[in-house]
Length: 255
Image (cartoon, rainbow, N blue to C red; front, top):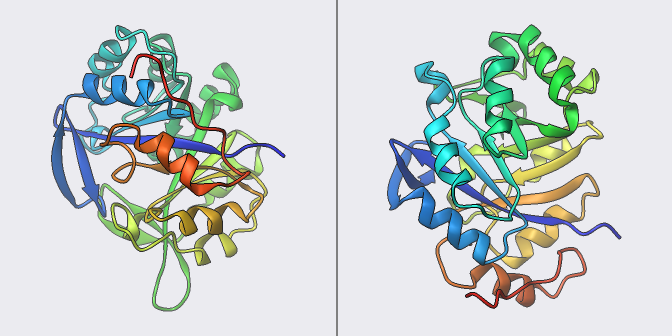
């Protein structure tokens, strides 16, 4: 059985790591260097860094942030998302040490450049981000961070999936993001995609993980507020889950 991954998610805003609640309320935590070093030491399977508002402000990826992380010489794979709008951006992000990238805004703003990115760096390096929810009419909706409004999933997102241009889909239950309510499983039940899925949002309790991993498409969970801010919290959680789903916990001799 392929082991699921426990991905530690870092939200980065205004030069600081923050706790995020529904992507609307933010609580400053501290420096990116401290957070990344801790997560590397605590043996997260991967570290997902989302530099939010870069696309909204049209200021490109946070290359200074990536340089800081590269200088740490950590071993944990890094996933970066935020501000990637063309092939040059993607290449530079990879050159600065990111193992994979997350794309979202570019899908609707510059699909031809997204195709170039997939062609040049390979679909295995690309994760498609989709913040989703279920509305009062039991319909699936896509949340646009820039406008703070919900829409139908656009044709370009569907095309990116059907054209096999991405490796995994990061589905964020944005309404439960930062909360302890569990992931809304109706979201993935309504999706007929066969792609590997990473789920984020509301995943807090052991039972939350067990529920999402029952879907064979779910290969990873991205968790931020729950596991990222306490010594050995990742390892202890893996041990307490007592599940064959997750990779075994590891305690660093340097802890």
